Amino acid sequence: MLKFNFQKKLLEAGCDEAGRGALAGPVVAAAVIMPKKFDSKGINDSKKISSQKRLELSNYIKKISICWAISVIDNIIIDKINILKSSHQAMTNALKKLKQKPKFIIIDGNRFYTDIKTPYKCIIKGDNKYLSIAAASIIAKTHRDEIMKKLHEEYPEYKWNQNKGYPTIKHKEVINKIGVCKYHRKSFNLFDRQYKLEL
Image (cartoon, rainbow, N blue to C red; front, side, top):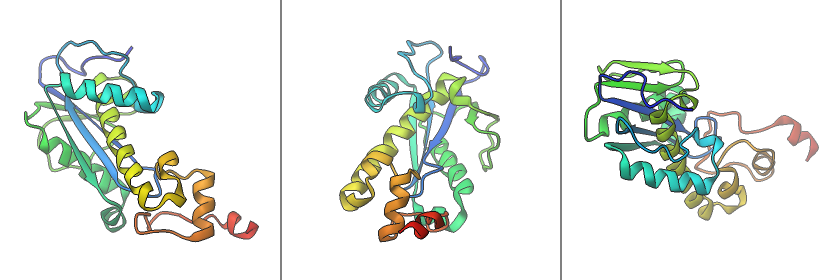
């Protein structure tokens, strides 16, 4: 069972991102401050929940949270500054956009480079341990999925409505067959030599 807080005294925000390992599209971060106690309704790591359940939970989290915010960093910026910096910038931006300033932050991951002065704690697999990080992961994942569905309408051949830009075998096969588009991350390893030899 996920914990409500890392610490109980200070107003705490959870933060996570989605899309870090994708080959196309943006990285999206969310930050959320949840009430001290609430009905979790099955809130968990977004990767362990169906897309329909994620959407239901995302709407529920937005409704009951004290405040929440989202930040999007597109593939152009990712290629300029790299995915690690982009992920941290997205999380920083989301935290700064919160309508209420937290006194403490818990971040999913093992490191966080930011100019935010608020005390924070990085927690490996935090979305499996704390409800606020899991809630942030759900909001971020749901928002990014909606972006990828819209980009799919522009480039349906990549099937982003299904793979959401991640490096599935079929996605990489299409890349090797027809090339990349303006939403792909050019700084990533987009082409698989094995597929090229087989074509």
